[in-house]
Image (cartoon, rainbow, N blue to C red; front, side, top):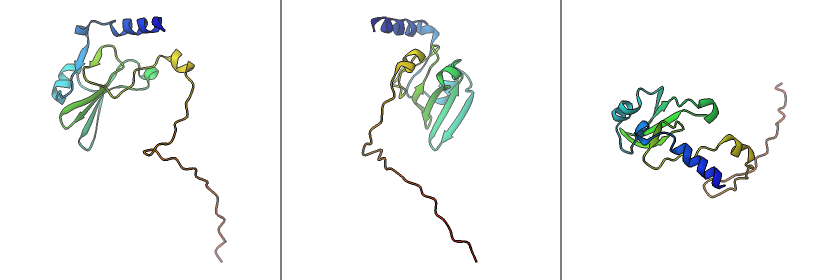
Length: 131
């Protein structure tokens, strides 16, 4: 366990902070684009905008880096690239190394008030032929 923590801290410190592009909560879209460059893809839904950036680990990580804006202000960012950092509290859990993910056991999610799970049975209904 201590070795794993040491490895994680070394990875986190692999790049000097000056080499990382830092996105701060409240930054405008223009400021994000000035700092990170033109996004690969942009999507909007209502008042939210999502700026997607390549991170070099799309196949391994399963995602692009994402900056989330509400209106014209950054409210979240999820980065897997070591070249980027979000100074706020990201909604994303830490990235799990593949070896750790393979060792992990699947857990059953218990139903809660907000996620009511009901068993459903589907039966075929035989229709009478039309005369």
